[in-house]
Length: 176
Image 1 (cartoon, rainbow, N blue to C red):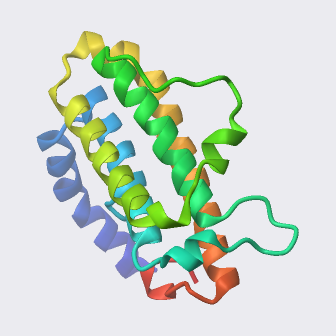
Image 2 (image 1 turned 135 degrees about the vertical axis):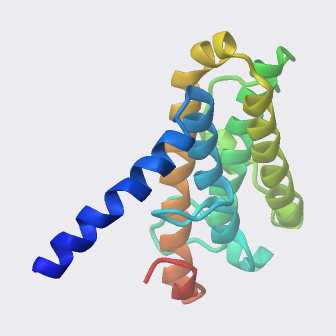
């Protein structure tokens, strides 16, 4: 116990120096949220590795009585992330009639690779947009970006559960 206390005491200057060297900003915080829900693993598995290796057949599979497939969840994420990317770019987003079910149900197994690739591209574009935005713009986007990251993490968890149910999840990716 005493050795642990000494170790903690001695590590404080190093931790303080690291914190002083990289102050947290709104931009760095938002980028971290987007990246750890996209492709940089931290406390949980992000969406890109959660989808890596999923076949079109696995993407279309639903458990008996299940709500959505992996493909439907990925399609839903693609739709909403694309909508907000367009809004942030001040471009007209895709038409939406208000029926959120269609953001899931529009999934087509033949387009699985395209959905996965587009989702990765859209998430990367969101990160680039945030990286290049000024502080005033980020202030106005911050609440929405936080919700986007939370939404992406939520559905990624559902994707992992479905992969586990299929017996198609590698626990070495971060979730046992």
